[in-house]
Length: 469
Image (cartoon, rainbow, N blue to C red):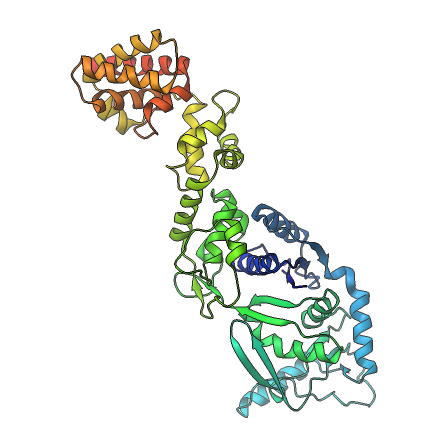
Protein backbone atom coordinates (compact mmCIF):
# COMPACT_ATOMS: atom_id res chain seq x y z
CA UNK A 1 0.00 0.00 0.00
CA UNK A 2 1.14 3.54 -0.82
CA UNK A 3 1.71 5.56 2.34
CA UNK A 4 2.50 9.28 2.45
CA UNK A 5 2.66 11.81 5.24
CA UNK A 6 2.66 15.51 6.00
CA UNK A 7 5.01 16.28 8.87
CA UNK A 8 5.02 19.97 9.87
CA UNK A 9 6.98 21.42 12.78
CA UNK A 10 4.72 23.42 15.12
CA UNK A 11 7.15 26.32 15.39
CA UNK A 12 4.94 28.67 13.38
CA UNK A 13 1.73 28.74 11.40
CA UNK A 14 0.71 26.47 8.55
CA UNK A 15 1.87 28.46 5.52
CA UNK A 16 1.27 28.22 1.78
CA UNK A 17 4.39 26.17 1.02
CA UNK A 18 3.45 23.68 3.71
CA UNK A 19 -0.13 23.44 2.45
CA UNK A 20 1.06 22.62 -1.06
CA UNK A 21 3.33 19.87 0.31
CA UNK A 22 0.41 18.49 2.33
CA UNK A 23 -1.85 18.67 -0.74
CA UNK A 24 0.57 16.81 -3.02
CA UNK A 25 1.07 14.09 -0.39
CA UNK A 26 -2.68 13.86 0.22
CA UNK A 27 -3.55 13.72 -3.48
CA UNK A 28 -0.95 11.05 -4.23
CA UNK A 29 -2.22 8.83 -1.43
CA UNK A 30 -5.85 9.35 -2.46
CA UNK A 31 -5.19 8.66 -6.13
CA UNK A 32 -3.25 5.49 -5.38
CA UNK A 33 -5.80 4.21 -2.88
CA UNK A 34 -3.20 4.63 -0.15
CA UNK A 35 -2.95 6.07 3.34
CA UNK A 36 -2.16 9.64 4.39
CA UNK A 37 -0.72 10.43 7.83
CA UNK A 38 -0.41 13.71 9.72
CA UNK A 39 2.66 13.78 11.96
CA UNK A 40 3.52 16.69 14.23
CA UNK A 41 7.32 17.00 14.45
CA UNK A 42 7.50 18.75 17.80
CA UNK A 43 10.89 17.65 19.13
CA UNK A 44 12.16 21.26 19.09
CA UNK A 45 10.86 21.79 22.61
CA UNK A 46 11.99 25.43 22.84
CA UNK A 47 10.18 26.61 19.69
CA UNK A 48 7.19 24.26 19.42
CA UNK A 49 3.94 25.73 20.75
CA UNK A 50 0.40 24.51 21.33
CA UNK A 51 -0.85 27.54 19.42
CA UNK A 52 1.03 26.41 16.33
CA UNK A 53 -0.24 22.84 16.71
CA UNK A 54 -3.82 24.12 16.88
CA UNK A 55 -3.26 26.34 13.83
CA UNK A 56 -2.00 23.33 11.85
CA UNK A 57 -4.96 21.17 12.89
CA UNK A 58 -7.47 23.95 12.18
CA UNK A 59 -5.87 24.69 8.81
CA UNK A 60 -5.97 21.04 7.73
CA UNK A 61 -9.60 20.81 8.85
CA UNK A 62 -10.65 23.95 6.95
CA UNK A 63 -8.88 22.72 3.81
CA UNK A 64 -10.56 19.33 4.04
CA UNK A 65 -7.23 17.47 3.95
CA UNK A 66 -8.38 14.58 6.09
CA UNK A 67 -5.81 12.08 7.35
CA UNK A 68 -6.11 8.34 7.82
CA UNK A 69 -3.68 8.33 10.75
CA UNK A 70 -2.78 11.04 13.18
CA UNK A 71 -2.06 13.46 14.45
CA UNK A 72 1.00 11.56 15.69
CA UNK A 73 3.28 13.58 17.97
CA UNK A 74 7.00 12.89 18.02
CA UNK A 75 7.26 13.96 21.66
CA UNK A 76 5.16 10.88 22.49
CA UNK A 77 7.79 8.63 20.93
CA UNK A 78 11.00 9.52 22.78
CA UNK A 79 11.38 6.00 24.18
CA UNK A 80 11.26 4.57 20.68
CA UNK A 81 13.97 6.95 19.45
CA UNK A 82 16.14 5.99 22.42
CA UNK A 83 15.75 2.31 21.46
CA UNK A 84 17.01 3.03 17.95
CA UNK A 85 19.95 5.11 19.21
CA UNK A 86 20.90 2.29 21.60
CA UNK A 87 20.81 -0.18 18.70
CA UNK A 88 23.14 2.09 16.69
CA UNK A 89 25.56 2.10 19.62
CA UNK A 90 25.39 -1.70 19.69
CA UNK A 91 26.31 -1.79 16.00
CA UNK A 92 29.15 0.69 16.61
CA UNK A 93 27.34 3.17 14.35
CA UNK A 94 26.92 5.95 16.92
CA UNK A 95 29.24 7.73 19.33
CA UNK A 96 29.43 10.50 21.90
CA UNK A 97 30.95 13.74 20.66
CA UNK A 98 32.42 16.04 23.31
CA UNK A 99 33.36 18.92 21.03
CA UNK A 100 32.37 22.25 22.61
CA UNK A 101 30.75 25.06 20.59
CA UNK A 102 34.02 27.01 20.84
CA UNK A 103 35.97 24.02 19.59
CA UNK A 104 33.62 23.56 16.64
CA UNK A 105 33.78 27.27 15.75
CA UNK A 106 37.60 27.16 15.75
CA UNK A 107 37.54 24.02 13.60
CA UNK A 108 35.25 25.67 11.01
CA UNK A 109 37.31 28.85 10.90
CA UNK A 110 40.47 26.83 10.25
CA UNK A 111 38.72 24.92 7.46
CA UNK A 112 37.53 28.15 5.85
CA UNK A 113 41.03 29.61 6.05
CA UNK A 114 42.36 26.52 4.28
CA UNK A 115 39.71 26.84 1.57
CA UNK A 116 37.90 23.72 2.74
CA UNK A 117 34.19 23.10 3.15
CA UNK A 118 33.29 23.71 6.84
CA UNK A 119 32.05 20.49 8.43
CA UNK A 120 32.57 18.32 11.48
CA UNK A 121 35.88 16.49 11.11
CA UNK A 122 35.02 13.35 13.08
CA UNK A 123 37.53 14.06 15.86
CA UNK A 124 35.59 12.03 18.42
CA UNK A 125 34.52 9.26 16.02
CA UNK A 126 36.93 6.69 17.43
CA UNK A 127 37.57 8.39 20.77
CA UNK A 128 38.33 6.00 23.61
CA UNK A 129 39.96 8.27 26.16
CA UNK A 130 38.65 9.90 29.30
CA UNK A 131 35.67 12.20 28.53
CA UNK A 132 36.38 15.90 29.15
CA UNK A 133 34.93 17.16 32.42
CA UNK A 134 31.85 19.40 32.38
CA UNK A 135 30.94 18.71 28.74
CA UNK A 136 27.54 17.23 27.95
CA UNK A 137 28.09 15.28 24.74
CA UNK A 138 25.86 15.07 21.71
CA UNK A 139 25.41 11.75 19.93
CA UNK A 140 26.55 11.48 16.32
CA UNK A 141 25.87 8.89 13.65
CA UNK A 142 28.85 7.26 11.96
CA UNK A 143 28.24 8.12 8.36
CA UNK A 144 29.97 5.76 5.87
CA UNK A 145 33.37 7.10 4.85
CA UNK A 146 33.42 5.61 1.35
CA UNK A 147 31.03 5.13 -1.52
CA UNK A 148 28.14 7.32 -2.56
CA UNK A 149 24.43 7.83 -2.05
CA UNK A 150 22.20 7.73 -5.12
CA UNK A 151 18.77 9.38 -4.84
CA UNK A 152 16.35 8.45 -7.62
CA UNK A 153 14.15 11.46 -6.97
CA UNK A 154 10.70 11.39 -8.57
CA UNK A 155 10.86 15.10 -9.33
CA UNK A 156 14.54 16.06 -9.45
CA UNK A 157 15.78 12.94 -11.20
CA UNK A 158 18.92 11.12 -10.10
CA UNK A 159 21.05 12.91 -7.50
CA UNK A 160 24.39 11.40 -6.44
CA UNK A 161 26.34 12.47 -3.35
CA UNK A 162 29.72 11.09 -2.25
CA UNK A 163 29.78 9.96 1.38
CA UNK A 164 33.04 11.81 1.94
CA UNK A 165 31.05 15.02 1.44
CA UNK A 166 28.82 14.18 4.40
CA UNK A 167 29.85 14.61 8.03
CA UNK A 168 28.68 12.65 11.04
CA UNK A 169 25.30 14.19 11.79
CA UNK A 170 24.00 14.74 15.31
CA UNK A 171 21.16 12.35 16.16
CA UNK A 172 20.67 13.43 19.80
CA UNK A 173 21.30 16.78 21.45
CA UNK A 174 23.32 17.26 24.62
CA UNK A 175 20.07 17.20 26.66
CA UNK A 176 19.28 13.77 25.22
CA UNK A 177 16.43 14.84 22.91
CA UNK A 178 16.58 13.30 19.43
CA UNK A 179 17.12 15.49 16.36
CA UNK A 180 15.02 15.85 13.24
CA UNK A 181 17.18 13.66 11.02
CA UNK A 182 16.85 10.71 13.37
CA UNK A 183 13.18 11.05 14.30
CA UNK A 184 11.99 11.45 10.72
CA UNK A 185 13.82 8.28 9.67
CA UNK A 186 12.53 6.22 12.59
CA UNK A 187 8.97 7.49 12.12
CA UNK A 188 8.95 6.82 8.38
CA UNK A 189 10.22 3.31 9.06
CA UNK A 190 7.76 2.53 11.85
CA UNK A 191 4.83 4.02 9.92
CA UNK A 192 5.68 2.18 6.70
CA UNK A 193 6.07 5.29 4.56
CA UNK A 194 6.56 4.38 0.90
CA UNK A 195 6.80 7.90 -0.51
CA UNK A 196 8.24 11.03 1.08
CA UNK A 197 6.96 14.13 -0.71
CA UNK A 198 8.49 17.31 0.70
CA UNK A 199 10.08 20.63 -0.19
CA UNK A 200 13.44 20.59 -1.94
CA UNK A 201 14.95 22.52 0.96
CA UNK A 202 15.18 19.04 2.54
CA UNK A 203 17.22 17.60 -0.33
CA UNK A 204 20.50 18.18 1.54
CA UNK A 205 19.21 16.03 4.40
CA UNK A 206 18.19 13.13 2.17
CA UNK A 207 21.58 11.41 1.62
CA UNK A 208 22.27 11.49 5.36
CA UNK A 209 18.82 10.07 6.05
CA UNK A 210 19.22 7.34 3.45
CA UNK A 211 22.40 6.22 5.23
CA UNK A 212 20.44 6.18 8.49
CA UNK A 213 17.61 4.12 6.99
CA UNK A 214 20.17 1.55 5.88
CA UNK A 215 21.99 1.60 9.22
CA UNK A 216 18.83 0.76 11.20
CA UNK A 217 17.73 -1.88 8.71
CA UNK A 218 14.78 0.05 7.27
CA UNK A 219 13.49 0.10 3.70
CA UNK A 220 14.32 3.39 2.00
CA UNK A 221 11.17 5.18 0.79
CA UNK A 222 10.93 6.87 -2.59
CA UNK A 223 11.56 10.61 -2.49
CA UNK A 224 9.90 13.46 -4.36
CA UNK A 225 11.40 16.86 -3.58
CA UNK A 226 9.11 19.60 -4.84
CA UNK A 227 10.50 23.07 -5.62
CA UNK A 228 10.02 26.13 -3.47
CA UNK A 229 7.19 28.66 -3.77
CA UNK A 230 8.61 32.11 -4.44
CA UNK A 231 7.19 35.56 -3.88
CA UNK A 232 6.58 37.85 -6.85
CA UNK A 233 9.97 39.46 -6.22
CA UNK A 234 11.67 36.09 -6.83
CA UNK A 235 12.67 35.48 -3.21
CA UNK A 236 11.42 32.63 -1.05
CA UNK A 237 7.80 33.19 0.00
CA UNK A 238 7.65 34.68 3.48
CA UNK A 239 5.53 36.88 5.72
CA UNK A 240 6.57 40.02 3.86
CA UNK A 241 4.70 38.74 0.80
CA UNK A 242 1.34 38.77 2.56
CA UNK A 243 -0.54 36.16 4.53
CA UNK A 244 1.55 34.18 6.99
CA UNK A 245 -1.02 31.57 8.02
CA UNK A 246 -3.26 29.66 5.65
CA UNK A 247 -6.14 30.66 7.96
CA UNK A 248 -5.65 34.27 6.86
CA UNK A 249 -6.88 33.23 3.42
CA UNK A 250 -9.98 31.86 5.12
CA UNK A 251 -10.57 35.27 6.74
CA UNK A 252 -9.95 37.00 3.40
CA UNK A 253 -12.88 35.15 1.87
CA UNK A 254 -11.25 32.37 -0.13
CA UNK A 255 -12.91 29.00 -0.56
CA UNK A 256 -10.67 26.15 0.62
CA UNK A 257 -11.14 24.23 -2.63
CA UNK A 258 -10.15 27.33 -4.61
CA UNK A 259 -6.94 27.74 -2.60
CA UNK A 260 -6.10 24.06 -3.13
CA UNK A 261 -6.89 24.37 -6.85
CA UNK A 262 -4.51 27.30 -7.10
CA UNK A 263 -1.79 25.51 -5.16
CA UNK A 264 -2.02 22.26 -7.11
CA UNK A 265 -1.25 24.24 -10.28
CA UNK A 266 1.67 25.95 -8.59
CA UNK A 267 4.19 23.42 -9.87
CA UNK A 268 1.95 20.77 -11.48
CA UNK A 269 -0.13 20.69 -14.62
CA UNK A 270 -2.70 18.58 -16.44
CA UNK A 271 -2.64 19.90 -19.97
CA UNK A 272 -3.90 23.47 -20.06
CA UNK A 273 -6.65 22.96 -17.50
CA UNK A 274 -6.73 25.66 -14.83
CA UNK A 275 -9.87 24.96 -12.80
CA UNK A 276 -10.25 21.63 -11.02
CA UNK A 277 -12.78 20.15 -8.66
CA UNK A 278 -11.37 18.17 -5.75
CA UNK A 279 -12.43 14.94 -7.47
CA UNK A 280 -10.58 15.96 -10.63
CA UNK A 281 -7.43 16.76 -8.65
CA UNK A 282 -7.50 13.29 -7.11
CA UNK A 283 -8.16 11.67 -10.50
CA UNK A 284 -5.44 13.50 -12.44
CA UNK A 285 -2.64 14.16 -9.96
CA UNK A 286 0.66 12.41 -10.46
CA UNK A 287 4.28 13.14 -9.60
CA UNK A 288 5.46 12.81 -13.22
CA UNK A 289 4.05 16.22 -14.12
CA UNK A 290 5.41 18.07 -11.10
CA UNK A 291 7.75 20.79 -12.33
CA UNK A 292 11.31 20.77 -10.99
CA UNK A 293 11.58 24.59 -11.14
CA UNK A 294 10.30 27.01 -8.46
CA UNK A 295 6.86 28.57 -8.86
CA UNK A 296 5.80 32.14 -8.17
CA UNK A 297 2.86 32.92 -5.93
CA UNK A 298 0.43 35.28 -7.67
CA UNK A 299 -2.32 36.73 -5.45
CA UNK A 300 -4.25 38.06 -8.44
CA UNK A 301 -4.33 34.60 -10.04
CA UNK A 302 -5.47 33.07 -6.74
CA UNK A 303 -8.31 35.61 -6.63
CA UNK A 304 -9.32 34.72 -10.20
CA UNK A 305 -9.38 31.00 -9.33
CA UNK A 306 -11.51 31.80 -6.28
CA UNK A 307 -13.93 33.76 -8.45
CA UNK A 308 -14.34 30.75 -10.78
CA UNK A 309 -15.00 28.41 -7.85
CA UNK A 310 -17.61 30.78 -6.41
CA UNK A 311 -19.39 30.80 -9.78
CA UNK A 312 -19.42 27.00 -10.03
CA UNK A 313 -20.26 26.30 -6.37
CA UNK A 314 -23.74 25.31 -5.29
CA UNK A 315 -25.55 28.09 -3.34
CA UNK A 316 -25.95 25.88 -0.25
CA UNK A 317 -22.18 25.39 -0.07
CA UNK A 318 -21.53 29.12 -0.43
CA UNK A 319 -24.16 30.02 2.15
CA UNK A 320 -22.36 27.99 4.82
CA UNK A 321 -19.25 30.11 4.36
CA UNK A 322 -20.90 33.47 3.67
CA UNK A 323 -22.97 33.24 6.86
CA UNK A 324 -19.78 33.63 8.92
CA UNK A 325 -18.97 36.97 7.28
CA UNK A 326 -22.57 38.19 7.40
CA UNK A 327 -22.74 37.66 11.15
CA UNK A 328 -19.37 39.41 11.55
CA UNK A 329 -20.87 42.38 9.70
CA UNK A 330 -23.71 42.54 12.21
CA UNK A 331 -26.44 41.04 10.04
CA UNK A 332 -29.28 39.09 11.64
CA UNK A 333 -29.90 36.38 9.05
CA UNK A 334 -33.35 35.71 10.49
CA UNK A 335 -34.40 39.21 9.38
CA UNK A 336 -34.34 38.61 5.65
CA UNK A 337 -34.57 36.02 2.87
CA UNK A 338 -32.99 32.56 2.93
CA UNK A 339 -29.24 33.08 2.54
CA UNK A 340 -29.11 30.28 -0.05
CA UNK A 341 -31.38 32.33 -2.34
CA UNK A 342 -29.18 35.40 -1.87
CA UNK A 343 -25.96 33.51 -2.65
CA UNK A 344 -27.64 32.08 -5.76
CA UNK A 345 -28.31 35.64 -6.89
CA UNK A 346 -24.84 36.99 -6.05
CA UNK A 347 -22.48 34.10 -6.92
CA UNK A 348 -21.69 35.37 -10.43
CA UNK A 349 -20.73 38.82 -9.14
CA UNK A 350 -18.17 38.19 -6.39
CA UNK A 351 -14.44 37.45 -6.36
CA UNK A 352 -14.36 36.56 -2.66
CA UNK A 353 -16.80 35.46 0.01
CA UNK A 354 -16.30 38.82 1.72
CA UNK A 355 -17.38 40.63 -1.46
CA UNK A 356 -20.45 38.41 -1.58
CA UNK A 357 -21.25 39.12 2.06
CA UNK A 358 -20.82 42.86 1.53
CA UNK A 359 -23.15 42.66 -1.47
CA UNK A 360 -25.76 40.86 0.61
CA UNK A 361 -25.99 43.27 3.54
CA UNK A 362 -28.92 45.30 2.15
CA UNK A 363 -31.07 42.14 2.08
CA UNK A 364 -30.90 41.97 5.89
CA UNK A 365 -29.99 45.40 7.15
CA UNK A 366 -31.77 48.69 6.40
CA UNK A 367 -29.47 51.53 5.40
CA UNK A 368 -29.74 55.12 6.63
CA UNK A 369 -28.30 56.83 3.57
CA UNK A 370 -27.68 56.22 -0.13
CA UNK A 371 -24.30 55.86 -1.81
CA UNK A 372 -23.42 59.49 -2.57
CA UNK A 373 -22.23 58.91 -6.13
CA UNK A 374 -25.16 56.66 -7.10
CA UNK A 375 -27.70 59.01 -5.51
CA UNK A 376 -26.24 62.06 -7.24
CA UNK A 377 -26.53 60.33 -10.61
CA UNK A 378 -29.85 58.53 -10.30
CA UNK A 379 -31.96 60.05 -7.50
CA UNK A 380 -32.56 63.32 -9.31
CA UNK A 381 -35.84 65.23 -9.62
CA UNK A 382 -36.38 63.60 -13.01
CA UNK A 383 -36.61 60.22 -11.25
CA UNK A 384 -39.43 61.37 -8.99
CA UNK A 385 -42.29 60.59 -11.39
CA UNK A 386 -41.21 57.02 -12.35
CA UNK A 387 -40.55 56.20 -8.69
CA UNK A 388 -43.96 57.52 -7.61
CA UNK A 389 -45.72 55.49 -10.29
CA UNK A 390 -43.70 52.41 -9.37
CA UNK A 391 -44.47 52.93 -5.69
CA UNK A 392 -48.18 53.00 -6.43
CA UNK A 393 -48.03 49.92 -8.66
CA UNK A 394 -45.87 47.90 -6.28
CA UNK A 395 -48.03 48.76 -3.27
CA UNK A 396 -50.98 47.20 -5.08
CA UNK A 397 -49.05 44.18 -6.28
CA UNK A 398 -50.58 41.04 -4.80
CA UNK A 399 -48.07 38.51 -6.14
CA UNK A 400 -44.56 39.62 -5.06
CA UNK A 401 -42.44 37.77 -7.63
CA UNK A 402 -39.60 38.82 -9.89
CA UNK A 403 -41.82 38.32 -12.93
CA UNK A 404 -44.61 40.52 -11.57
CA UNK A 405 -42.15 43.22 -10.46
CA UNK A 406 -40.45 43.13 -13.87
CA UNK A 407 -43.83 43.61 -15.59
CA UNK A 408 -44.57 46.74 -13.50
CA UNK A 409 -41.11 48.23 -14.26
CA UNK A 410 -41.75 47.62 -17.97
CA UNK A 411 -45.23 49.10 -17.80
CA UNK A 412 -43.92 52.23 -16.05
CA UNK A 413 -41.17 52.70 -18.66
CA UNK A 414 -43.72 52.35 -21.45
CA UNK A 415 -46.21 54.71 -19.83
CA UNK A 416 -43.57 57.43 -19.47
CA UNK A 417 -41.90 56.52 -22.78
CA UNK A 418 -38.58 56.06 -20.99
CA UNK A 419 -35.78 53.57 -21.46
CA UNK A 420 -35.61 50.80 -18.87
CA UNK A 421 -32.49 52.35 -17.37
CA UNK A 422 -34.35 55.55 -16.53
CA UNK A 423 -36.74 53.53 -14.38
CA UNK A 424 -34.63 50.57 -13.27
CA UNK A 425 -31.58 52.50 -12.07
CA UNK A 426 -33.45 54.90 -9.73
CA UNK A 427 -35.29 51.85 -8.38
CA UNK A 428 -32.00 49.98 -7.89
CA UNK A 429 -30.49 52.85 -5.90
CA UNK A 430 -33.71 53.26 -3.93
CA UNK A 431 -33.99 49.66 -2.74
CA UNK A 432 -30.30 48.67 -2.47
CA UNK A 433 -28.74 51.99 -1.48
CA UNK A 434 -26.19 51.83 -4.33
CA UNK A 435 -25.76 51.46 -8.06
CA UNK A 436 -24.67 47.80 -8.19
CA UNK A 437 -26.88 44.75 -7.74
CA UNK A 438 -28.06 41.64 -9.58
CA UNK A 439 -31.21 41.85 -11.73
CA UNK A 440 -33.39 44.42 -10.01
CA UNK A 441 -36.61 42.38 -10.24
CA UNK A 442 -35.03 39.30 -8.59
CA UNK A 443 -33.32 41.56 -6.05
CA UNK A 444 -36.58 43.28 -5.14
CA UNK A 445 -38.33 39.93 -4.74
CA UNK A 446 -35.79 38.79 -2.15
CA UNK A 447 -35.65 42.12 -0.31
CA UNK A 448 -39.38 41.82 0.19
CA UNK A 449 -42.39 44.04 -0.42
CA UNK A 450 -42.44 45.91 2.90
CA UNK A 451 -38.77 46.88 2.75
CA UNK A 452 -38.97 47.87 -0.92
CA UNK A 453 -41.96 50.14 -0.34
CA UNK A 454 -40.25 51.80 2.64
CA UNK A 455 -37.03 52.33 0.71
CA UNK A 456 -38.72 53.77 -2.38
CA UNK A 457 -40.49 56.27 -0.11
CA UNK A 458 -37.12 57.07 1.49
CA UNK A 459 -35.72 57.76 -2.01
CA UNK A 460 -38.65 60.04 -2.82
CA UNK A 461 -38.05 61.95 0.42
CA UNK A 462 -34.38 62.26 -0.58
CA UNK A 463 -35.37 63.70 -3.97
CA UNK A 464 -37.77 66.17 -2.32
CA UNK A 465 -35.02 67.47 -0.07
CA UNK A 466 -32.71 67.68 -3.08
CA UNK A 467 -35.26 69.74 -4.99
CA UNK A 468 -35.40 72.27 -2.19
CA UNK A 469 -31.63 72.66 -1.81
